[in-house]
Image 1 (cartoon, rainbow, N blue to C red):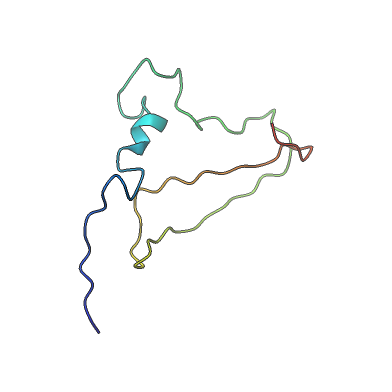
Image 2: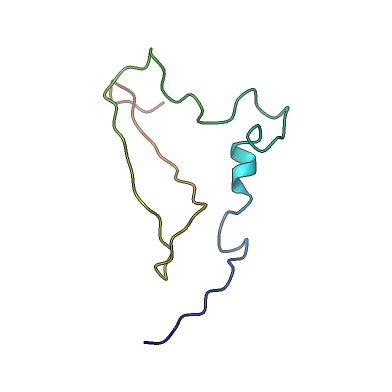
Length: 83
């Protein structure tokens, strides 16, 4: 079997590795952008509806594990409506 040579991805091929800075500036010690990082409090004790857990792994086209992936999700509210 031929060994594949893996090259580092360029910014034109991916949105990262710097994408987490824009989503979580407080986590990256950049203050003053947001009071809290996006997605920190998606669900609280007032949130209606059923809770689910989604797990998985992200692989690139060559089958290598992607370690710094961002997953965008959309979900309806408890009434089945999108904001």
